[in-house]
Amino acid sequence: MRMGRVEARVSQGETIFGKIIRGEIPSDKVYEDDLAVAFRDIHPVAPSHVLVVPKHPFVSLLDSSPAEAAVLGHLLWVAAEVARREGYAEDGFRVVINNGESAGQEVEHLHLHVLGGRRFGWPPG
Ligand code: AMP
Image (spheres, protein in one colour):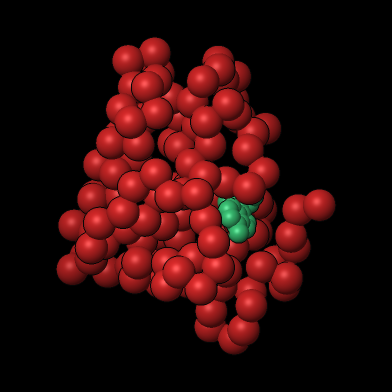
């Protein structure tokens, strides 16, 4: 069963992704550096479904300043690196950021979904 927005927060101002970043709960990591970590989604919607999460706890894209634009750009590079490591970079892959409730954002810590290993329809649901 998928978590709701309330359950996704493990305490005020903190989310389950913060606990994963600090290694307090396990994750299946595929990449990590000083700025970001990438790990497999527990409810994959594609043969490969990896989440790229900044170590800085941005709530969403709206929660960032021009001074932090380089970090946001780095997350896109990490998404491409994940696609290369997962082996579908040349075939094609999709990167999704759900921002806010109507887009389906459940965890209030910015994250990129990197999806690959199948064909994707457009427009997305
Ligand atoms: P979103 O709906 O864009 O906020 O995406 C949140 C994603 O986090 C969902 O696809 C969940 O399956 C995923 N997720 C939640 N908890 C975990 C966890 N402990 N490890 C890996 N993925 C998780």
